[in-house]
Length: 76
Image (cartoon, rainbow, N blue to C red):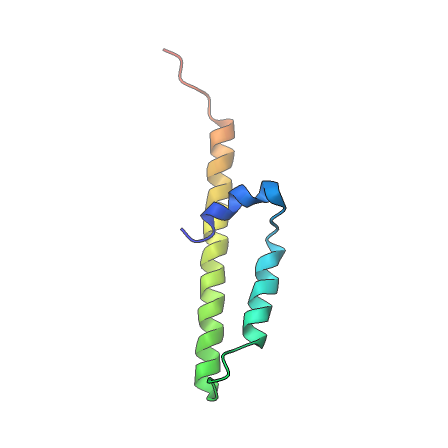
């Protein structure tokens, strides 16, 4: 899933605020060929969708990592 692998980047300084900065940059710098409002709206929605999916994947990764830490090994 998008964003899942970003959990491992936390140890290297990754912060989720970077996604907000990334989104802002993409929304402010739309491709110059987009002249129609519908094209600009589609671009914005696409960026927001991708980033939302990344956040979902990231939080799933965090939950999985937490479950791994909390799991008790089975002793036979």
